[in-house]
Length: 146
Image (cartoon, rainbow, N blue to C red; front, side, top):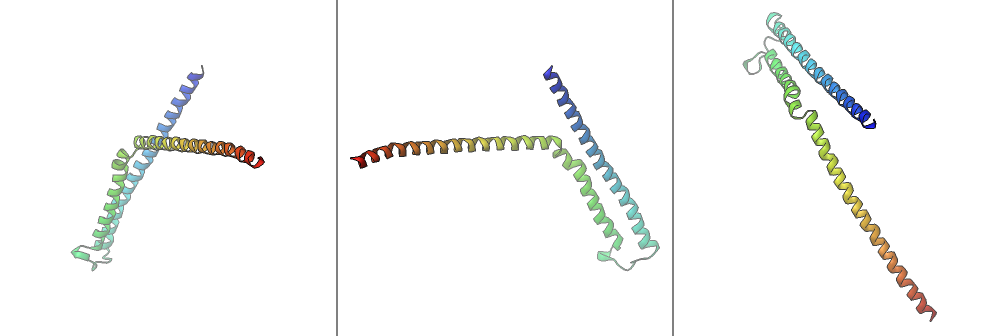
């Protein structure tokens, strides 16, 4: 009876974790689509500002109008966003986090075990030193009495 409730609560926790992960992924993808829409609208607006309204028509770094450079930089940022959402998340997603967490936990457990052994060794050394002192002290007291 007890194991059943533990099993159910574990399943519920896993389902909740999967749901939260799915929500986070949806939020990431939604943000990416929004970024893409803003990019398209912004590129059109910048082109209209330069070509139709003639704002900054004389500004041409490296023989290209200024708005082209702004769009190129913005496209680079958009591609970075795409990389983060689709590529990086695949390699460094929840599974990767779990593997890293398990690795760190095992390293911590190993370190704690080493510290426990070291502490036990130090305690034993102190006890040995105390016994040696006790053994040496009664002899010196007997010698003083004689």
